Length: 399
Image 1: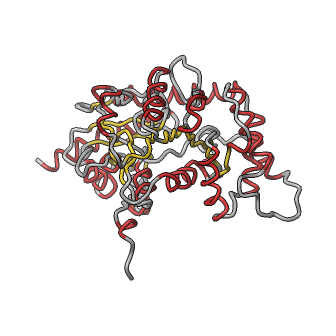
Image 2 (image 1 turned 180 degrees about the horizontal axis):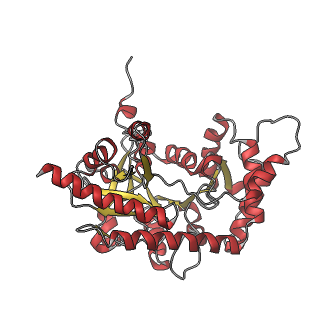
Image 3 (image 1 turned 120 degrees about the vertical axis):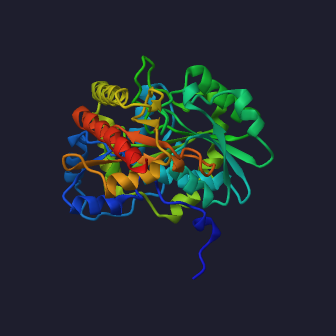
């Protein structure tokens, strides 16, 4: 069988590719601590399960292709409370933020086109772009500069006749960068001036550690034609398994093109949309504040633990629940195999996401990892301790 060159260019997820090795380690009786995947252990609010349980229809029917009315209205009202008025026909329900990207990218990317993405970036972006036939042109950043990328002199030289869009995550995955108001304005201006679509992945919107209020690129009404927002209930409500998200844009022509794909996949899950609507309706500002404070505790625990590991380098995150870390090893992926196959301390070991998959250039990020701090502070502290012990054992073995 001949497979497409597009799919063959895609790689496995660095967050999930080590799952068989995890299973083997656990079969040997080891406890594996998880730093590899953004799966929070914060309880999903009961409102989701109550709404699903109270679903009164006798037939679980197809939802309308754009989404269930109660869900679209709940998303609309959520944005209104944030100060960003939108209408229901500017929202499309999707299977999480991932499908929102899989819908919007083919709308603007053809074979040979390019999209700018700050690097390091969420690895699945690479898969979603490659299957369109387009390519990522990375916007380079560095830990020494705090992974800042909203700089005209850094971005504009990368724009050429093939450039169609810019994709950002704010707050950032995997860097934890949060754009300032001035940086958000600059990104919008660049998109407008060069007639590009700015796709803003905002699934971590409420998880910020400074004093700033949650923001959205929807604030720039003068850029209605140039902005599309990707959103999801996965992180906001710790409901990753529900797979409910949204593609939002005031660009009516874009949304009309996106509707073709929404109709082609028929609909997002009816029951999950109804339950997701209850989350938006019933979770108030106090809920978001509590979640944000819990992630702050977890971030502080990871930072404190990393500061006790010799010769690691990192930039403290401003938002989301990830950080990139440079390790004193030759290859973070080889270290991961070692941790799962050969290392243990008191019957425990640890997983993370090797950093090379977060870069477009092969070999870059080879001694970096992404940490997801989504478990309780004590578990995170132990996970980083295991990482430090594992690094020492790995480097000692090679001497």
